[in-house]
Image (cartoon, rainbow, N blue to C red; front, side, top):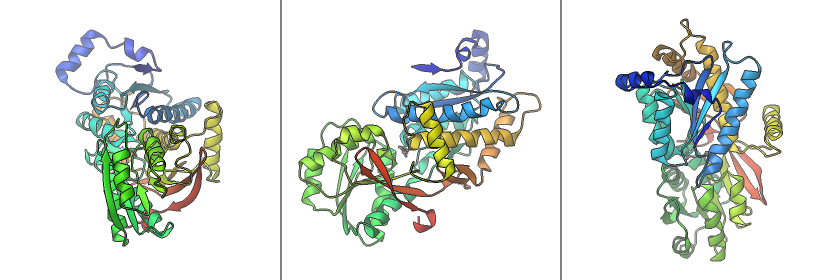
Length: 399
Ligand code: PHE
């Protein structure tokens, strides 16, 4: 599916230009336009569709804001969005299209780390800056110097939940249930185990499943037999609901703990109350009284029929604003050509220099590894609400 909001981007790629680009094999720039074109890719359909749809709402909000104030350097910012259905090969295909066919100057996405990792090499190869708002696996930004993230990384996030399990829940033993088809889940599981054991805890069971699994009885029965104090489930919301229901049906009543992958309203529907009182780490809380957060939440609700922004929406809003700030910092290109390699290098440098950006997900500074250094929150599930429990700072969790 191609959700073009700019319409004309599709129609202006003349065959001759396209052929010339194929021969040159370089960055597109095929579509000369009065605007500045940003590309966006994500799961707008498929198992994890709230990841892409929430991201899109956050991106759109930030772009509407800047355009209503006249845009960047007198030009309107435009976004071209492709649905990758949450599939890595599709992610790679649509990002290649964004670069080579549409001439996107920068790319926003993805959410799931595995998908970001599939597409990032395309951005790196073509020297098109990519900012993932939400992918937390360490490997994502290691692809190269054009790849950034505006969220924290999983060694920290896993440490947050291990430390919470030990210090706040007084857990001495834990089981871990990993989605081995996702880099996110594997990395987060490893980080949790590492910190939990360093803090004196013992991992008593390790089980796994793969994307699309329909049944978790065998894994959860083994976990139950090991009698853990807590079960860490670093999965995505579309699996975690059924995991919660199955755990409770087997009489496994200890707290289940998770990471940001739990964050979707859809989780509550699927879990049917089975995750009541459980905890997960996340990027922000809508309960934060900071006016920056409250203004964002109110504006988002207004724009989206009363729906509250989840973490992806907030992260995407911040990532887009950071990108727009970088356009401002890089300045307008002297020759007016935003798509030149020279301009994209300037834009890259401006993103890399992001310091103390006041985001709704916290103050964002990008380090030398192009990762954001910022706090996490721990949230507890009550009905269909996520209640704020604690903020954890990077300095509290030794990596
Ligand atoms: N951090 C997850 C990943 O890397 C994606 C995610 C972010 C999911 C935020 C939900 C909320 O795959």
